[in-house]
Length: 307
Length: 316
Image (cartoon, rainbow over all chains, first blue to last red; front, side, top):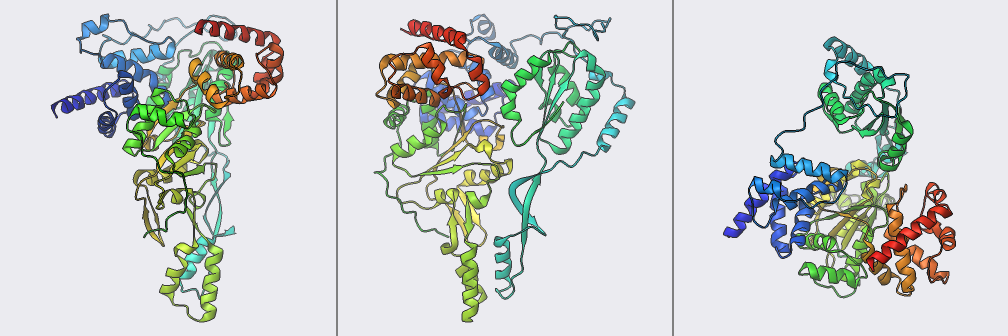
C-alpha cells in the first residue's frame, strides 16, 4: 500500500508539472492514471510512458510537451535542480520540441526568468512603400490605444449588425410550418387518446457558418489591423466559431487569444503571440501555409472566408 | 425496461487480453501490425472499459483497429458512420411512425381504443427501430459488441454533446419506453480525421491516442502481412519511396492505405521493382490531389527515388 501511495503522490506532482506547462490535466485524470498504471503494471519504461500518455493527453499538439516533461520528471533517481540542469536532454530536433522544452523548463522553474522582451526602439521607421527582404519583427502594444478611442470602437462595433448569412443544415427542429413531424404528431395524438390528430411540423434548422478571418497586419495596413481585430473579437464573442489568422511575413493563429472575454486582454494576447507586427508582407507564403496547415481543419462546414 | 437480445451468431467469444504483449498478439492475429504504444492504449481501453479516441491522418488504420478487435475478440461490430446532419433519429432509435399510425387507426375502428393500453401498445418494442447506438447497448448473448463511431469530426458539434451522455453511462432514455442500460458496456472506438477539434469534454471521457505514420520497418511488415504475394524487392522499394514522399512538401501525404493500394496495383501490373516511368504512370494511386501530382515531374520523381534508395541502403 505504501508504494502505491508514493506512486500516487508522484503522479499528482507530475500532473501539476504538466498543468504548469499548459496541459489541462484534471484531478479525475490523475485517478485514472493511477488505475491505468495498476492495470498495465510498471514493467517497461515505454509502457509506463504510453500508459500515462493515453490517460493524461487529449490533444496531439501536447505530445511534445508531454515527452519533455516525462523524460525530465521520471528520472530513475530523483536529482536536484542543479544536476537536472547539467544533464543532457534527449530530444528530437525541431522548433516544436524546443518550444516544448522551454515550456517544461519554465514549469519546473528551471529558467530563472523569461527572456526579456526586446527593448522598444524610440525611432519608428516608416516602412510603408519600401520593400525590404529583412523581416522587421516588431511588437505592437495595444495598450497604447486611448480609452476613449477604445470605447468608441467597441460601441460602434457592437452596434454593427451582421448580414443574415444563416445556412440551413440537415438537422430538423420543431417549427410552426414545414414538413409534418410524425414523431411529435403521434405523441400529441396519443395524449388525446387518438381521437384528434393535430399535425405538428418541423423545418430544417439554420446555422451560422463558421467564419475564417485572415487579417493582414503588415506595415501598410497597420492603421486598419487594430480595429479589424477588435471587430473579429466582437464577432467571435457574439457568434463563436470564428477562426482568426494574422499574417504579415508569417502566419499566426490567434483564434484562442481572441476567445478571451475581455477585449483588452484578448488583443494583448494577440500582440504577444505575433512577432511580425507592422513589418512587411509575404502574402503568398502566408496563404500557402494556411492552405497546407489549416485549411482542412478550419474550412469545413461551409465556412466563410474574410480578409 | 429490457430489450430483447440481438441475434448474432459470431465466432467463439475470446477473452480480453491479459497484458500488453497479449494485445499485440491479438491485434496481429487480425493482421494488424501495431506498435507498442497503440497496443498499450488498446489494452488499457479494454481493461478500464473506457472509450478509445483515435486521431490521425487519413489512411493510418484508425477504423481498422475497431474491425480487427471485433474480429479477433469474436464480437459484433456496430458501426456508426458520422456525417453532417446526423441526429438521434438515425444514430440512436426511431419509432416506426407509419406502423404506429396504422395501429391507432385499427384500434379506433375496432372501438377498443383505451388510452392507457393504446399508449403501451404503440410505444412498445415492436414499433421501435434500433439504430447503431441503441443496437450497441442492447443485450447481446455473444458479448458486448465493438461500437465504432467513425469520423466523428464530420458530425455537427451538437451531436457530440448527445454522445457524451451515451459514452458516460452507456445508457439511453427513451421517454415513452424507459431507460436502457447496457449490461456490459460495448467496446467503443471513436475515430477522427481532425477536420475540426473535438470538444475536450468528450475527449476527457476517452483514452486518447494519435496514430502516426508507421516507420520504415513497421510499414514493411504491414505490407508483408496485407499483401503476402508481393515481391520482396518491390515492397521494400515502394515503402521506402512512400516514406521519402512523406518528407516532401505535399498537400496530403500518403497514408498506409495508399501504400497498400500501390503495392497491390503494382503486383497486378507484374512489376518487380520501381522505376521512374512506372512511378509516373501509377502515382495517382498514392497522391490524391492534382496539385501534388502535377508537382511531381520526372526530375522530382528521380530525386525522391534516389533519396528513398539511399534510405533503404542505410536501413540495410
